[in-house]
Image (spheres, rainbow, N blue to C red):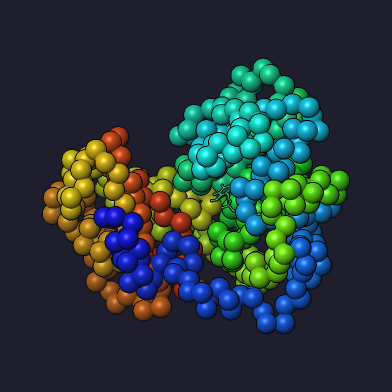
Amino acid sequence: MNDDEARQLRTRCTRFVNGHGQQSAADYLATVPTQTETDRYGEGGVVAELETYVADLLGKPAAVFFPSGTMAQQVVLRIHADRSGRATIVFHPTCHLRLHEDGALERVQRLVGRAVGDADRLLTLDDLRVVAEPIAALLVELPQREIGGQQPEWEDLVAQVAWARERGAAAHLDGARVWESAAGYGKTPAEIAALFDTAYVSFYKGIGALPGCCVAGDADVMAQAREWRKRMGGTLFALWPNAASALTCLHQRLPRMAPYVEHARALADALRAVDSVRVVPDPPQASMMHLLLDVSSQDLAFDGASPNHSATWALTLGEMIQFIHMYMQLGFLALEPIIQVSDQPVEPSLGSVVLTGTLSPSSRLAMTCHVVPTVELPLAKACCSLV
Ligand SMILES: Cc1ncc(COP(=O)(O)O)c(C=O)c1O
């Protein structure tokens, strides 16, 4: 299936457990109140209002709005490096800067990213202790997106941050999903941010607003961040639509973060019973999980997909059930108890299932399933409808 086909499939879906579902331009525009007070080059209006709100939410003296996390984190890490006179930033091997920013830390900022630990598990204090060179900052991503949203035990997290501090380095939080992380820990976003010198938080992921984010920290660091935002071209003439959307969606969705985690755990409970399906992490530590299917790449080589090439699957609820049936017929999955539940009438307002997976030569289909139900439903009902 190519990208276009996947997109077309997705547009046919009416129910989603992944994200907030298919949002139209009208849906996004509706998150920007018509009486919004505009800014000029990021000064005043709703942008200032959002920055104050987020600084308070994170318990930090100041916050600055940025158009993207890619820009915001480069800026803040650059400031930590300049202040410490060091160039090395330590992070998990799968962090966004390393995998998805095309080497910007090195090529744009002339900093040195140093990955420590293993890509398929969380960072540990022992991994950090291997680092001998002086470092500018430790970046911690919560939850760790590429390994299904795992989070370290709270004590481990505290110890890792202390390790950075003892070495005169800053601790920076990649909190793209800090709202989900906080709900997973049963703590407030401020309790998490309190561990860190600076925190980046995003508004278009779990919060579901238009693109944009904030970094928060001490006032002098944030003043520098504002200067760098301008140098990097991030101080657009008007930032108000995105800032207003962020405020609307924060008010609407922050209170839902705890139910989202409960919902993810309820789904995991249902999926755990399925042979050959592994939920990672189990139980989910935030409203996010990976589903690993124990099938060989040869088994998946249908529909033109070669076993050695990447394939993306976008499945509607019906297609997912067909998919599961097919694997049952082929004898790869034993799903009877779950399939039976699917005979019950499906709640029309629940949302569709869109799962994407990558067929890798390592013979596993990894399906990422970010669980954010589009409507509030009793958990049991939502679960039955999904399966
Ligand atoms: C963990 C993490 N950090 C940073 C980013 C960068 O955010 P942006 O897309 O706003 O540049 C992302 C985006 O997906 C992310 O998942």
